Amino acid sequence: MHRDPRPRPIPVLAIVNTSEEITLLLSALFQMEGFRTVAAYTRDIKRGKMDFAELVRRHHPDAVVWDVAIPYEENWTLFEEVRASAAGQACRFVVTTTNKAALETLVGETPALEIIGKPYDLEIVVQAVRRALQDDLRTALT
Figure 1 (cartoon, rainbow, N blue to C red):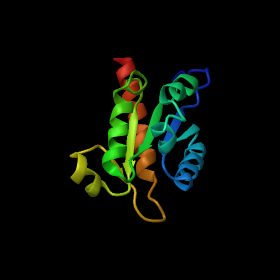
Figure 2 (figure 1 turned 120 degrees about the vertical axis):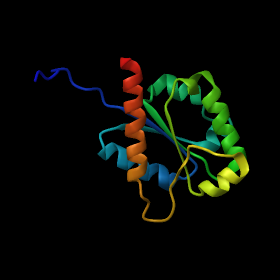
Figure 3 (figure 1 turned 120 degrees about the horizontal axis):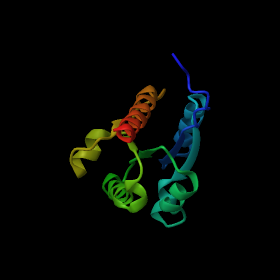
């Protein structure tokens, strides 16, 4: 079997979260998994201190791990606005939350992965990101 001699590009993952601790944890995890990570905080996007479109233009993330925290309704609305934007439509999102039932009570069914407790079971997030990237690759090839 012939192997492509060109190096594979390092995938870029944007992490959008409210928690500095979780952001650092996810960044370290995905860097160990071979990703380059960039981080943003939900509050900065919400307050206009960080422009999501600029983050996408600057870093070209292959996927975005976006956490929806309390207040759920407000943060879900922000996520929906970002996802509907031109920059958001160009992204693959993996949505996380710490309380899926509470989120869905307020906003209806979501694709969010529930991340609860410590130690966090982050393997489900890694698998979801890899699936998102595979789906993207299949779409690009068809």
